[in-house]
Amino acid sequence: MLFPTHLVAGAVLGAYTRLSVAWLVVGAALPDLLDKPLATLGVTTLYHTVGHSALFGVVVLAAAFVDRAAVAVAVGWVSHVLLDAAHVVVNGRPLDALFLLWPVAVPPAPLALAPIPFVQQYLWSPSFLLEVGIWLGAGVVLVRRRRAYRSRPESGR
Ligand SMILES: [Zn+2]
Image 1 (spheres, protein in one colour):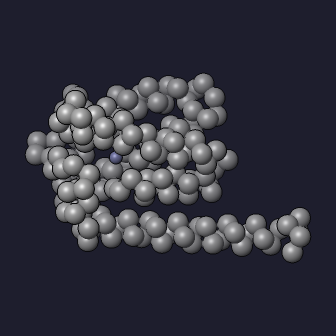
Image 2 (tube, helix red, strand yellow):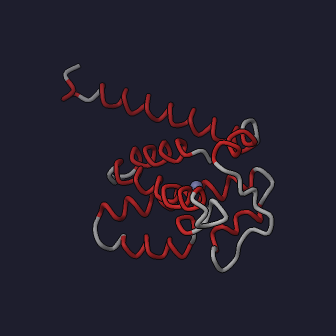
C-alpha cells in the first residue's frame, strides 16, 4: 500500500479505539520508515524486510507491555503489515506475503521496485482501487466524527 494510506489507516484506528492517534500513526509508519531507506541505500535487496517481519513484530508486541503509547505503536504496526499483505494478495502475488517471515523465508520473485517505479506500476491495480475505498471510508469516518462532535451538548451548538 502507499505510505499515506498507512497513515490514514492509523488515524482511522484512533477513531475506533482509545489509543493515541499520534502513536497509532507512528506505528503505522514504522515498517516503511525502517525498510525503505535500508533498501534505497542498498543495505537490503527488498523493500519489505526488518520492519515488515513478524520477528520485528515480536519485539513491537513485547514492547506493548511497557505502556499505552507502545500499545498504540504495536496496533499501528500490525495494521501496516496486514494492509501490505492484503495488498500483495489482492494484486495476485500471494507469495510476496512471505515478507512476513523475513529473513526465515523471502518471496521467490518479489517486484523489488524503488518507491517511484512501484507507484507507477501500482496505479489502477486492484489493490490501488482497494486503497481508494480505504480513503473514501476514512472520509466517511471523519465526517461522522465531526458531526458527532458538533452535536454534543457541550460543543455550544
Ligand atoms: Zn509497507
